[in-house]
Length: 66
Image 1 (cartoon, rainbow, N blue to C red):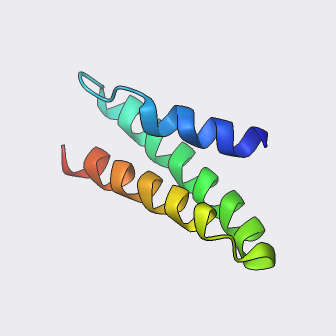
Image 2: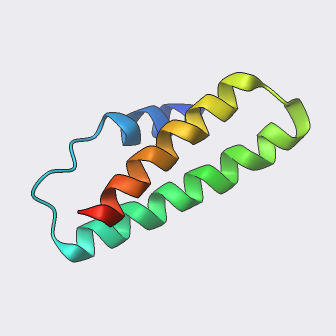
């Protein structure tokens, strides 16, 4: 799935030395990924999708705390 590839790329992306606008953009991207994956998760209840959403959420929280 292309969506999961984008999610893995997002989780692996280095987030140091980002400007405020870069952090906002990354946070919005994370939100979009989570919502898209959640739609699929509701239909399939695949635990792997939940794990991916959790990883993205952790990354998103780190963006806000910096």
